[in-house]
Length: 173
Image 1 (tube, rainbow, N blue to C red):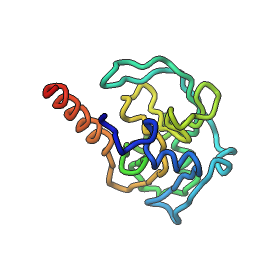
Image 2 (image 1 turned 60 degrees about the vertical axis):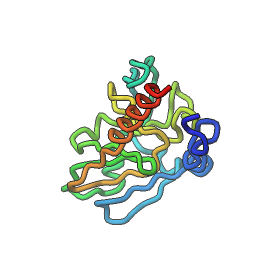
Image 3 (image 1 turned 135 degrees about the vertical axis):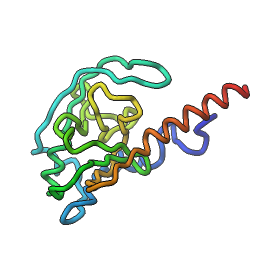
């Protein structure tokens, strides 16, 4: 079993903890780090996207209705430095870098089909990049880091390493 010892019912322990006590850290090029809970985000603007994602293993995923907060709202809320170039969105070490110019179109979803996102679907918060690659849709987001010059693209590296491991495992089976 590939995830033996690393997940509980397919959900990583860090995601279980995040679901039980959701918080979102704003860090990096901000005047002060902040830790937010869902109630702190209710007044922020919302956008919606109806569409699918492309998955490396299973192709295009079915369309779904995602609702959430554009990253640009977090840029304002955190008072990110004007020189910020990247918004690094992460769950533990798994991160995707969004160029600041895309912050209006990319969002942190907290609703799927008008219901709160279940932990099994990546909730409490999940990064949505319309028509993006599946591995860029970070599940269980816990941190938004504003960076002046360092993009964190660990999600792509981790996804590629997982794909290579699956291929190697399939070859040896």
